[in-house]
Length: 109
Length: 114
Figure 1: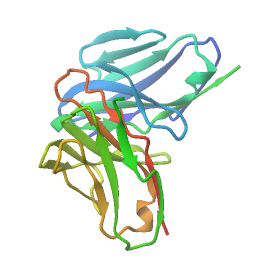
Figure 2: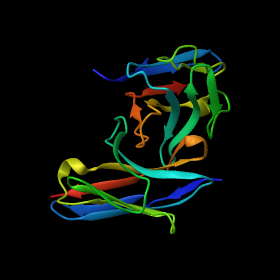
Figure 3: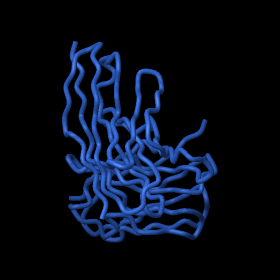
């Protein structure tokens, strides 16, 4: 089977750095993606890691360790608008995208 | 504008009354997929399609049907809706020609079955 584990909630203050972890178990693995979803809205793509290491895109970075079946999303210089749900997703067997249950990030001033 | 559209956006129906939620994309994507989102359960895949006339079950296909007769359209059919299918539904698409597996999501359809 396939499963992903990520924390259900994270809180932080503006300007801080927060890391959202994701561990996965999957048969067949192509890569790990991260999506952001604001309340009631559609998920939007943030990043994708196929190889081990860190990928940086502005204030957001994503990391993957294939040997540990682990990845994380790092958000720096947090802003109020970063308050949202963040989902890790694995591209597994059949290249289907399987999502975790999501982490709700609350940023306060 | 590149987009995925879904209709209707909101629907309230009664148990057993057949309904179809349409999904269309204008990006010439090969891959299309349907998800349902329920509180605390994240996004669960219902069905996906790798290309025209090719569909496959996701994690929660029971009670749903799909078809892919044209590349741009991927309707979701509920033959006999039940209250446990009350949910927020998202259609998504992506190309199979890149390495990023980036999916584009539609705006969502909020379905209530009474």
